[in-house]
Amino acid sequence: MLKLVPILSILLSVLTDAAYALIVGTLLTVRWVEGLDEVMREATSQPLQPIFPQQLQRRLLLLCTAALVLAHLARPWFLAASMSGSSDFHANLALIPTILSSTHQGTLWYWNSFALAVLLLGSYSTSLTRWLAPFSLLLIAFCKAATGHAADQGDFTLIESLQAIHILSTAIWAGTVLLSGLYLLRRIAAQRNPFAVWQYCASLSATATYALAAVLITGIYTSDKQLNNTLTGLTTTTWGKVLVTKIVFVLLALTLGAITRFRYLRAHPTPARATHILRLLSCEAVAMAIILCLSGALSNNAPPMSAM
Amino acid sequence: MSRTLLRKAHLGLTLFVLTLSFALTSAAFAHTHPAAMTPAADSTVSAPDGVMIHFTGAVESKFSHITVTDATGHVVNKDVSAVSSDGKMVSVTLPKLAPGIYTVNWVAVSVDSHRSQGDYKFTVK
Image 1 (cartoon, rainbow over the protein chains, first blue to last red):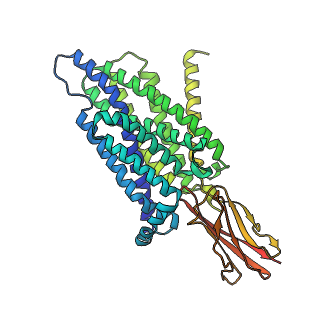
Image 2: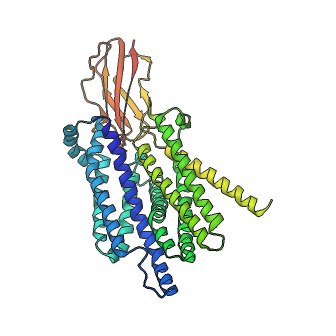
């Protein structure tokens, strides 16, 4: 049981991050494919299936929201395990009222519950989703930032706000790449219209670039404020090795994205090049899934400087 | 320098800075730990009125505490420890201590829920 708790905690983090990224990704990609459906309908006389059917969008949003809710309901027990340092199920269960009533994490758990309730309400109708989902996703990002190390110097600080933007921009990058690489671009490529692939990838590439810029700016600021000579542990601790592995996959994802953008998207659209883009984006999506798993492992591990 | 070479150099620089940014951001998530202790670790002092530890970040009052034990392992503090209003200092008052070596055991749960613990010694002359 003792070893199982950290593993379950990592899985919970991965599930939450992936579900959050996929919700953000769905809301963004839906707008890109709406225009493409029109273009492709005009280009062919045959009836075409929509690239991202509305029923599938709704199911995906509901599934990811349900995953967030389940992870949220389980979270107080894992908070109790983390705070008490114990893996005793009943002892940690008994601590939950104390955590929810008198800790910073408890207060934020209620705010997160409110954000999830709004998200759930929004997932019942398309018009509600457009209005309510961005608000609830922003609130979830703030709650996540405020439950992390960025909150150590207090709430509503610049560093906490930038951490929230960092979380949101990471979700935009990961969510759009995952959804595009594993599903949407395959659907678009199957229509045998390379121009549609180019049009979709132009939106994806522009969004990913802005998201990465935000990740970069917020990342450098928060690092500058919080870093205390911890790079020495990169090769000597488990935490450091996981981080190095994550960096390798981040570099891989960036390289794949850069090749797509600079080599293929600037060339004339052809079916052969569209196939190459599809392969590159599929690899980038797999790299992104691995990055999410490694991020979950990192957030549940103590970095070297905490060892005293 | 040709345009292609400039583009490659720009791309390489971007990749490097982004990677560094990811490394630094992840490295930043360290847990709360003591920044200053009174009495200081391994110091020799006159009998102190209490022990104070300033932490690098805010800690949870319900889960963070200090206990002081003597050389035989008996807890010498009569009161429970208290956390300051800003959450960054944990203190405990002490009765008049006899000369000897004492161990301060601390547990700190930061607001991000991570628990850290440690101990250090001081000597009463």
